[in-house]
Amino acid sequence: MKKSRIMAAFISGALTVCSFSALNVSAKVIEPEVVKTETWTTSYYIDDKTETLYPYIECRADIYNDGSVIVFFWNTHEWDGFEIVSHKVTIANSVPVKDNSMEYTFSKGEEYFDGDEAIYCVSAENYKTGEPFVKDYSFWDEQDVSYYPSDYSYMMAGNNFSGNTSKQYYIYRTKDNRLDPWKPHSYTLNYYAYYGPLSKMPVNDKLYIKFTPKVDATGSYDFYIFGHQFTVSYDMLSEKVIAVPQLTDEEKKIKELEEENVKLKEDIKKLSGDSPDDSILRCDTNDDGVIDGRDATTILTIYALNSTGKDIKTFSDYKKFAGAENK
Image (cartoon, rainbow, N blue to C red; front, side, top):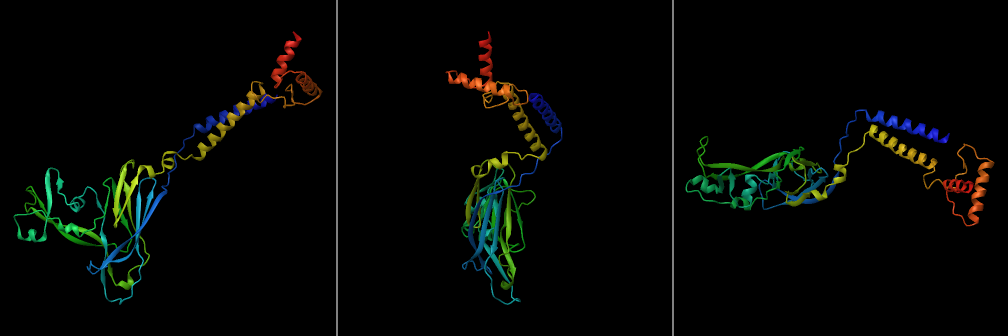
């Protein structure tokens, strides 16, 4: 009787699992989590007076387990001053450029190649006087160039320091360009800047730059942002969160039913007498659904036999022993 009830429950559970499996389920979106944070300070100067730096820009880089990076930065100093007098406040480090860009290459004192064409820097004086053009990278000795990996995209958000100021540099192309035959060109390196009265410059107003990988972040990626170097590596990313899918409500229910079916199978196996759990501690010795004198007689018989040296541990052992005795 008990076996029949458990078997019916098992069949019912199995049918329910099948019905849930037929449902259409959709995966949940995994929200990125911060796996590492770095903080540092950089400076700004006022009205192009680069020799006087004010270390009032706090920076924080949050590195996420999907490989993305958000760099926050904000002014921490409150200035006094007249509201009618405006100034230009410039962060001392450049707007980030890609690590395969012309600016990055020049900052290393190297020629940049556009296909098979070599491009190099010349001085402002050389640009004005004309040929012969001579390589000159001295402009870059005074620049602190921020950079990020070319496998990432770049986006900035915020109002404070959202205005750009630029510094000009000059290049020479080693091949003629039919669209622009004048080989020397003028380019600009950009910097973040605030324009306005110092007394109105926002304090603790966070801006942020977001760097998003354009590929699966499985390598090692170097950043140099606002004078601070850090690396995003695959080892620091949380593989568990990225790789393991989160179960939907339907999938959770299926999992619960599957676990219940496993338990029901174990119960059936126990009742069939084929399991170590078929022990003499089960008082319903003949599986008739009641505990009566016949069960007590069986238990006392097992007790007596074990007292005389027998080793009966299960009712299956007892049935075998009783069968052998009756032959």
